Length: 180
Image (cartoon, rainbow, N blue to C red; front, side, top):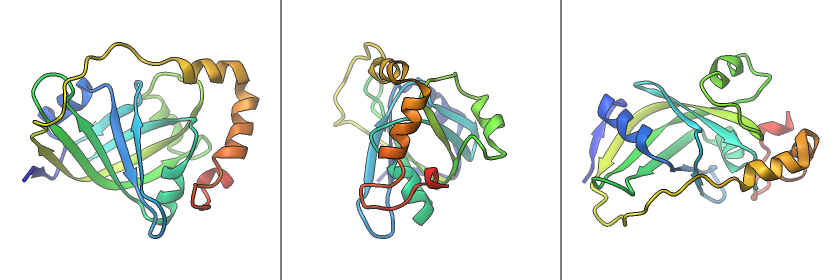
């Protein structure tokens, strides 16, 4: 049984900041559950009960569609180096797009990354730490550059066309906020 907390403690924040990868899980009331790995410098702890995650252009936009239907979200971190640990953050999320009033304040927390699509603003309701003793060790080598290279190649207009073609509905046909 894991240990629950109602906030992100300084110990939990240090663990989060040391991780190179995290996983995001969302689900609509009806439809597929989405579980996606995320990387790069795209995660910020804003305070003990709030985080923000910068979402880059990707093959789908499931989180956006799911949050319009059910705003629950789980974020998981695993220690692949050092002491074993699995951390889950449970909360409620909302999507922030560039034309939303909160955008300027939140985007200033992140590096400028080509292909930035939206920010997910998450209110943390609880955290859970568990042992992670069965998680294997992996060595971090480097970030992959393929996404940024592809975005540089297709340019801003190509990214917007990709959003139009691939990111306006979920795999279950649910609308995303990119439709607005």
